[in-house]
Image (cartoon, rainbow, N blue to C red):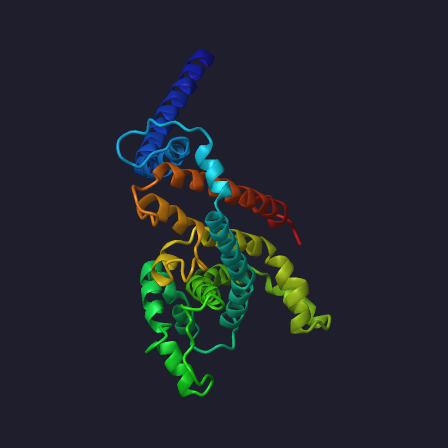
Length: 317
C-alpha cells in the first residue's frame, strides 16, 4: 500500500510539473515579441555603437578603418561637444529642480477634496503628454515667434511688455524658453505619479497630527514630504533620464540655436551622424564615440541617483 501511494504521489508530481512547464512555455511565447524588439532596437544598437566608435566610418559599407580610441579622444577635445554637454546638464538640472516640486504643488491642489471639477483639471494637465515632442516643438516655435507669435501678442495686449521679445533669437533667454516648454510638456505625467503617491498616504496620521495641533504647513513638511520620499526620488530619476535624452523637442523648437546656445548632446550626435555641418560624408564612427562618452557619463549619474533611490526609497518613516 505504501509503495502504491508513493507511486501515485510521484505521478501527480510529474503531471503537475508538466502542466507548469506548459504554462511557462506560454509565458515565454508571450514575452518573445518584446524580447525580439529589445534585442533588435536596444541591445544590438548599443553594442554596435560601441563597436563602430573604434572606426573611422562614414556609414557606407562595413567599417574597416580601425583607429582605436581616436574618435573618443577627438570628442573629449571638441569644445562643441562640451558646450552641448553643458546645455544638456543645465536643461536636465532645471527640469528636475523646478519641474518636480512644481508638479507636486499642482498634485496637492488637484488632490484637494475642496477642488471642484477635479477630473477636468487633471485632464487639462495631462493633455500635453498625449502630443508628441516634435509636434510640441513645431507649435511652440510659432507661438514664441518674434513677429506674430501668440505669446508676444498676449503679453503686449495685457500691457506686460511694450515691444515683442525675441524668445528664440536671443542667446540670453532661449534656454529659459526651452526649459519652460520642457517643464510644461512633462508636468502632466509627474502630476499623475504624485497623485498616485498622495492617495496612498494614511489619513489616520493626518487626523492624529491635527489633534496634536499641527497645521497644514507642519503636516506637509513633517508628514507629506517624508512619506513621499520614495516617490520623490523615483520621479526625479525618471525626469532626469528623460531630460538627458531630449532630442525631438530641441530639434523642432530651436534646432540647437542660436549659435549653439541650446545645442544638446543627442542633437550633436545626430548632426555628426546624419547632417554634417562641415561638409563631406557623415561621421558615423565619430557620432558613435560621442554617444558612448555621453552614455557613460549619464550612466554614472544614473547609478548614483539609483543608489540614492534604493537607499532612501525603501526607508520606512
